[in-house]
Structure formats: C-alpha cells, structure tokens
Image (cartoon, rainbow, N blue to C red; front, side):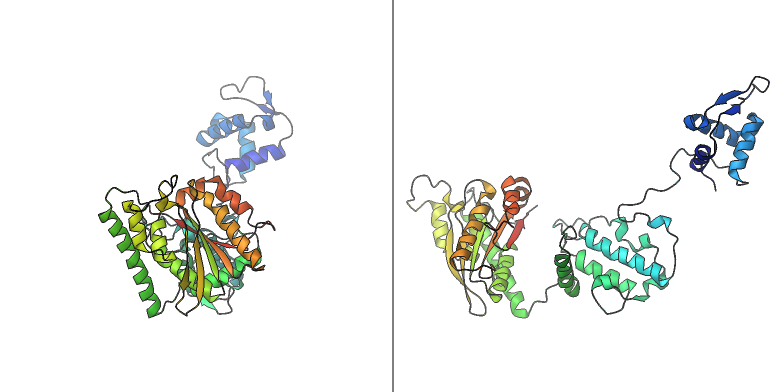
Length: 409
C-alpha cells in the first residue's frame, strides 16, 4: 500500500517543473502554475481531495496521482512518517524481514542476551516494600517473536561464554535468574572489555547466587539477630536519644561479616572503614568489636570527655583485631568521622594508601578500604565523585575499594 509520504517523495523526485493546476470549479479558467517541490502542504491537501472525491480535481491531477499509485488502492492521508521509529535497543530490527533460519534466530537471541545485561536490573525485585517493577518491553520474549518451536530450539551462544548448548527458554531462565531476582547489576557501561567479560563469567556461571553452607547460614542469622537486638535495646533504653539507627538495614552487619571473611581468605591483613553516622554504633559494636557497655555509657553521658567532642558517639573511631572462622587475624580500623557526611572518604583511603606504602603493598593485596555511604549522600555529595575521580591516579590509587550504599527506604 502506498503512503502519502511515498507520494510526497515521488513529487520531490519526479516533478522538477511547474505543473498547470486547475482548482475545482475553475476548469474554464487559465491554468495556474505552482512549484510542487516547494508546496508540499498544498500537495497534501489536493491529495486528500483526490481520496475523498477524485472527480472534483482537474484531469491533470487525477492522472498524476493515478500514475503514482500504480494501480494500488487509494490510501487515507496520514501526515506522519511512513516508518515506525525504532526502539532504543532494537534499532532497525523491525525493518529486517523475520526469518526462521538459524542465523536469524541466533541474531535475536544475541539481542535478547544483551538487553538483559543492559536492562535486567529494571526487573530486579529490590524494593523492600514489595512493589513489583514493570517489565521493560525489550525483556519480554514476545518482543523477539519467538515461536514455541524456537523457544525449545537448542542454540550455542558464544556471547554467553559457554560451550554448552541451551534452548532459548533455558537461556531466558538463566538471564532472569542472574539479572532480575533480588540482585540488580549495571556494568555494561564499563569500557574495558576484559572487565565486562570477567563479571559475566562470575555472575552468569553462578546465576548471581552464593551457595552457603549450614554454618554460614547460621553465622548470617546470628549476625542479623545481633544487629536487630542492638537497635531494639537502644530504642527502648534511650528514648528520644539521637542514634542514627540502622533499622531497616540490619543486613549491613552480615554483609560486612562475609566481606571481611572473604577478604581475609584472599590475603587481606588490614581493612580500613569509612562511614557516615547511620548504623555507626551497630558497626562499632558488632563488627569492629567496641564494648557495648562503653557505647551505652556514652549515651548516658557518664564519661568525662574533652570539650568540643559534641555528639561523640557518631564521630569517634575505633580499631580492633578480627579473628576469622579459619583462625586468621585481620586488623579493622573505623576512621574518626568528620561532621560533614561523606568527607571521611578521602580520609579513609588516604589511610589505606599510607598503610600500603609503609608495608610495600604495591598490589593492594594486604590492605583494603571499605566505604559505607548513605544512598542520598552518595549521589548528592560532590566529595564522593571527587574521590572516585582520583582512584586511578598513581599518587592516590589504593587499587580498589569496596563501596556499600545503605538505603532504608
């Protein structure tokens, strides 16, 4: 079927001279010459009249439109592009003929895999309120016009970095398990190909699931219980006191526990923490190992402290040794916290770099930093981006930092 845009293209490409025009009711008047290429709206109006009542036009116009239509039925004029704008992640796909060939199926599967890696986090169930996110169109199998037969067809995809043949249905299941459950991942913006491939191998081979032993599960449960109990005690015993509670984010404690255990198993001997106020007391008690009785005395103001310390419970640092489940020793240090939110970040990383230089740890394998941020301050505080900008400078790099962003909704 011919579109009006096609007719317009025909006008621009074939008419290069003035065409005599006789308007309806003026068949006996002298013809009027109008430059067609410069009057497309006028042409559209005449074509609309031609569709509605062709006999109302001069014979010259009737003949012209009939020659352009080539015998096709007249189309209702729609003054819009005759093509459908391609989607952001499917540019040009709809203009290609659908094919059931192996090459065509492989192409659609490759598009599916890339779109899940780029947009899969939009489907991840990360909202603690239980609100289910909408499924992006390009993550639905229907978007790729897979037939039931194709869903059960085995394909080998080099993109998935596996030699094992899987059906299209199994590939969709793998991608959803990896990117669309309770872990959302954004990494396709990384320029370094080897880094992206390394992440893909680690995540897709395990479907982003850590198999925990019975002892590890009990350890997580114990840490979580400790965190909840601490917050409940503070809330009940020190009513109205400013505590910057970790309530809603108690999983931070078992997360740090597992991070320390993992770092120690890979050779880390020292870990420097930098964090803001929220959750600081809980981390001091349940991770760094500060005596809870001392924390409670600070709440009761039983200690005589130097003038100028202010709300010292949220600014003072602490250090202690951590004994891992395998018996290894790791020295933990929580930095004294400047009052202004994220300004502790360069302080903590400067301390990490000093320790690395002092112990000739050029590869950054024995001392590492962990920075704990609030969700709003991580996005809004300029010092965070400035610290990240310095991460690869020879004089400042610490060869990698673990960032934990705390969001209690």
